[in-house]
Image: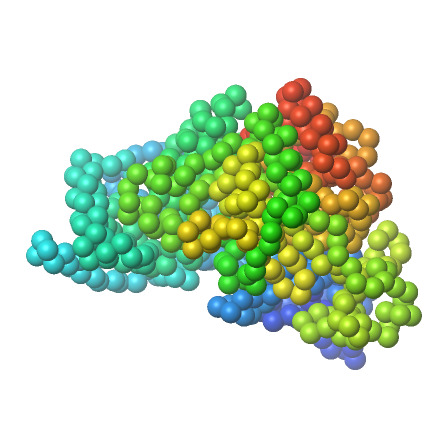
Length: 623
């Protein structure tokens, strides 16, 4: 990296740098200055000091982020990332792919001698070089793995087997493999392994949950996939290179069919990410069901802005330990009823396919049990969400003067230059809107949301809706009339996205949610021609972090902020684009949102899949 790249990167991560008495001074949040970054700074120290003396870069005692005077650390805490009882440390958001890359360790599983697909082999070699060039640590297989021995013991059959193998260490973020066609022997072994697992589960496990590592021990000897060699599947993703599926990436293939193709591909290869390769193009697939296609010439952009973010932030549900759990009466909630109405009215758009039950898609019980453990008990996969935010909740003055702000008190975990609180604990934020500083109360945010895996266009008011709160921590209220021990109720994967959008709208575009805020998310994009006066979009050039991640919440928070600063507060509808994933749309009114989306679908200006993404990208490029 050159000097300006180094300083711009550090600026995004709230690192403060200044020159005083001929000395370079640095103040940084915990965990940011890795040994590699320290070495980079040391190597460019004279140039950095010269830059700072000339005043050509805004890294000073007042850290600046993408949201002007709000640091990424503050945004992260505002949208609810404050750790939990299992991991109390605050996680600093990283949204620059180059910084993500420097924190990644990957390895490539050796290719079998019989493997003959030359296109995939060439792509594999190029991919390794590109990852290395962006700072990803690419470790040799022997260095990334460790020897592991285990025994399989099925008492009723008096069957024992000792297995010696190598497993990928838990500190490795991804292992990259090629799709290996099964041999007759491997198919027989898999059949035997599955029968043995079922016997073990019935007579030894007796129906109890079994750990991922134990399942892997029982079936791993029969597998010929990278998942077999992973020490901790929750820390290490499997990426498989295979032939490009032309039917899956074709723009005219119905999305419901793409769901089946995509899920079966992921399950067949037992991987989190599949990259399809041809001689001219390649695609990327994960549980977001991305159907993005790239030219082979676009590999640099693909590795940096698509692959690296997906490896850095894997798709995982928000654990219930993050929330304070309570109950609410959904039948007494006006906004819960509005949410049901919103879903019903959108049914005819076909933007919200029902998805699939994992039990229906994954036939092998051993595989199904591993997936269920990894996704924290999730039983369904659905594509889209339909939450409804209540109007923001305030106590006292919504906005105060700078003089009043200066008399407030510090808040633990926040910079006193950004967040302060009054005598009753209400927090106020100093932020810049346009050219003017504002001192606004941080409201309590409450969102009515469909539970994970539910049918978004046919919600049950009694059992399908949860209420999510954002105050000084995350809150989750379950339906009062439902026994959560009997009915599996989990919040959506996209909690951070919903909260990021709602809080940012309350702070920067409050008129949009005076009467509540309807939101929708679908796995497709609107066409550029669909947008009308006072309707705007943002996010086309964002790194493609997966859905539901903490980082995607930060990007959506910044999206609202940037739209307001570009176009002012007179916004009727906002579309927040998530590359390789889909679109979030919010509007000031339920009926307006529904009418606009229905019109777009009728005119085929809104469709599932990546068909219309190119038009949005082209407009941004032209600008």
